[in-house]
Length: 357
Image (cartoon, rainbow, N blue to C red; front, side, top):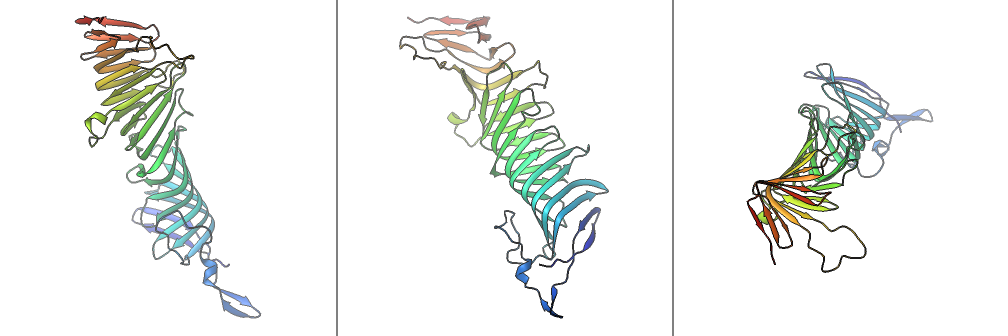
């Protein structure tokens, strides 16, 4: 197989792109004469490409090993792509690369590193797409795993459409471990904001605290503030439109919820989880053996308009018409504080109490 090598300097508007390519004759010498090379030799070998829109059965105009490419605007690096092999299709103005590593630069010079099986970009555009086993590591160590990723440097965004599953893991950078699963993701690099739009599950675990799992339709994570906002789709029936919160000893649901997942200090944990609107809280049975006797008292549950879960004090503060139920007893008041480790209910300005037979 013969290659053609070329050094191409391409300037499009304010964008400067430099690619090192290698030209070669399409004819080869044999016994003192020349014969035309078989075009099949120039068609990229391997499995069906993962990248979409790659010409099939077509000889690329250029191929290069140890590909190294930098995209800049006004002299500022936007991204850099390193690949084992790359193919250039002139008519389509398309570059297809295999076994890739991309470096995405933000305005502060910090680098996000993306590894994947393939990459694709158009030479008259600035967006970069990565395909197959995509592993993204942000400057602070936060990791994403997905089948696909698109970097839009002009908008300063990283996007994963909702048809692709996404896994996130921030345990390398947080004293508190935080993970999430979703379908689709939009990361606004300028705002340090992650938007998860479908089938979201977020899991947190702080030293000395119970594991907390939150399921919702949508979640917006503000990474600079270390807060997350959970909501449900308006298309859901009202009876199923609840954010669900689970711990080994507790279940809760509400229309929306906010999570403050700490400040990274070793002395701090999950500071607050706040549930809003139509809040229901129910204690869960402890995994004890043998099974509790049938005559054991039912576990208590509570309702209200707002609930604040304070992990440092291990209490739940209920407001907005709160009520607590156990057996046939009901307690209401302006503020009710549930002490989870002491099994104490503290009521401020109690206005009702009933005791059944």
